[in-house]
Amino acid sequence: MTATVLIPPLYPKSLSLRPNCNLAQLNRRRSSSLSLRCQAVGESAESAIEYRGVYGPWKIDSSDIREVILYRSGLVTAATSFLVASSAAFSNQSEAFDLIRRNLDLFYGLGACGLGLSLYLIHIYVTEIKRTLQSLWVIGVVGSLATYVSVAQPSGMSLVEYVVQNPMAIWFVGPLFAALTGLVFKEGLCYGKLEAGLLTFIIPSVLLGHLSGLMDDGIKLTLLGVWMALFAVFAGRKFSQPIKDDIGDKSVFIFNALPQEEKAALIEKLEEQNYSENLH
Image 1 (cartoon, helix red, strand yellow):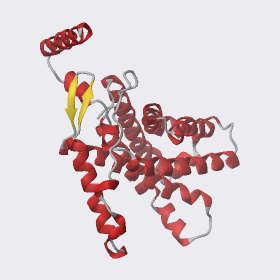
Image 2: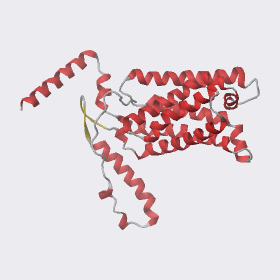
Image 3: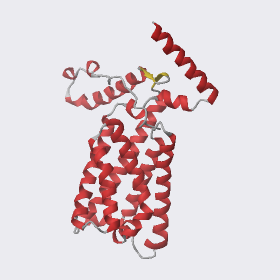
Image 4: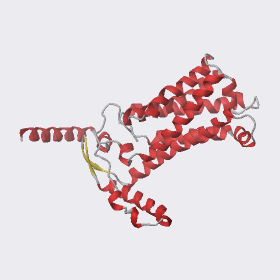
């Protein structure tokens, strides 16, 4: 999936569903059923809309909806895993947090998998940028596994504990977080999300501060807390967006998949149409 940083698409106004759902006529026991019904109507309505793209009209189909839901679910998985694992840094005496500490690598792995799913499905018009983020994710996963197998496990430590106690290990796990930074940067740039924009600076600041040793533990904990709060807001707000936002201009992706000859023919046809419209 992809979203552009070079050709910002223009979207129609989002559809209002209120006329289809008369809440005043329903009782409380049926409210949850109504909510599900409204959501289904919303997705159906979005699918019926024909959007005007750079290379022609397009519509949302069921596969688009499925991919967007999986993309957002991956982000929620990554955010939830990060929040649970990071919460252990703020409490020293608790059975619940002891359980979390014993499973830090499990949460790390779940978060990495969620991020990987989102990076696989993300919509970015420039393919090279998408491949770069995916490559950073792969390098980070390989680096994490290598660090765990070669040094963390022999030392009787989890990967997360080893990275916390050995800042130089950031070099091996860092690319994974660089991929995350790229994803939130794209979200902030395309949709103007404040929390995504702030995360673009918070994530590398925490990692570089830990790596360089120039940041004391108090500052790192404060920034970690800010990171947790912003990540939670970022992941939660994804589900308040229309499906079309995470699809982008579908006509661009259809165009990019065409053979060169068909691309040239389509561009020529569009130029002729524009010329005719200007004459009239």
